[in-house]
Image 1: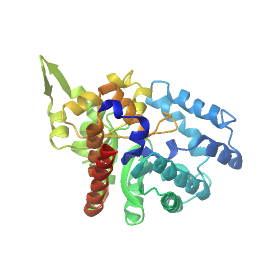
Image 2: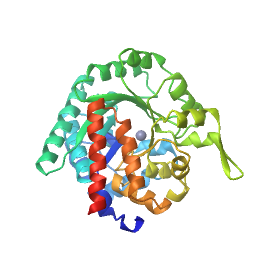
Image 3: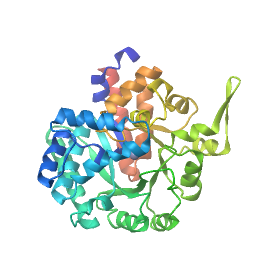
Image 4: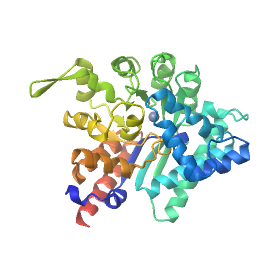
Length: 360
Ligand SMILES: [Zn+2]
């Protein structure tokens, strides 16, 4: 069956994107146009050269250098119109790749340089997502899109952003996240943000176990109560091989046994130095060990990737077939920050879509 897994077949499969940054998924041509309007200087002057610049600059081997590329995308996303356009195109690009459910994560606090309020920024993205969904529908592509409101871990606005998330919870915001440099900024730095979210019954995912290891994951799960982990792949630091078997430490066992969803982003991890190749990526072991793995792109611009490409690379590296890709997608659908009934519908759509592909 692996032979039949062409990129075209994978593109037609219904896919779920849980971990995809709004400011990491811009079209290079859009960045150029927005930069001109904003008077922002870019490192390249045409779309192809700019796309290459982002990929190469992000390919430096550390999370800190990788994050520097966002200075440019964030600089051109400072007006409501720019945010709305980027959100609209973000949805259209996902839909064109066969994504049927997508959560756009981004940090409103980084978009206030020209005077936008947090609320106006969230509403601009809300409107852009809705426009993208409506436009995709006219092209026969059905997609659900929501936003995940992110607080930057190096700033101290977590509670304010958590309150923003709950204020818009019935108006396009499906959850909360923290992102940014992991080392030196543990996820439990501002526990009051989680107290607020939990008091308001709001779900959240946390970036943890990417640049930093088990301490970060322990804090995200044990102290912060994260519902999902952004990346989380360093949980394998708590697993060791012994003879033919594996021994799981207590933290790895908890994450696996309670099936905490891991938002795994293979290409992004290769760029920040977690593994040297897809075949060496922890994904294969995590799946074999029974962890609840999902697949996402993280930043399609910086990694020059799509979910179709991530699936293609994983299938090539580990010999996965359509059943495996369906498992990763159902895992993701089940971990979506959706209501129960919508989630059941999404899961049914995934099963139906994969069944149709098998018959094609
Ligand atoms: Zn991320």
